[in-house]
Amino acid sequence: MGTTSITYDPASTMREARDKYFDINGFGVDGGYSDAWVDFHIGPLYCPFPNTKSRIRAVKVHDLHHILTGYQTDFIGELEIGAWEVGAGCKDFAAAWFLNLSSLGAGVLFAPSRVYRAFIRGRSTDSLYGRPLDDMLGRTVAEMRRDTNVDASAPEASFADRVAFAGYAVAGLAVSAVAASIGVFVVPVGLVTGLVRKLRRAPA
Image: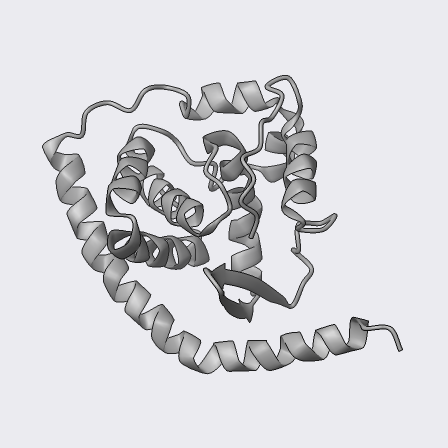
């Protein structure tokens, strides 16, 4: 994952901004959507996992959220945007709920104040989940920021917001535990697969 803070021209289309996002983060021309495995880094730890159809469906929207919100693609940035997406809502995107709740749960442990602020921000904004992708890519960054209300100052958290965060935090910790349990079996397979991929790409 990249760590560069990227500035996008508000007048550019979301497709143009996404191309810049892919390029600067080194995600490849198609953002890695066609890859069989996804490489996720937690500090020095390398944790590959399968790039499922459900995950691809969600990440195509998730990437646009990075552009709109400004959250980075490093470890803490992913925890923040996960909390933001939970707060804003993930509609019927099952992979988004699972991955974002995992991120929120991890964020409670590693960056509690930052994921709390991101969640509260999400509660007053709109996610892009469920919207037609091609239509969004053709609109400008400025239009989509206005449409989702991401540039507005987050209001002070209400009692309902705090209760919601507490509930999602508990759920996130549980989902994180499940994800960690799955990772015990999946990550070794991914590491072997990644090594094979590197060997195949290496010059003879």
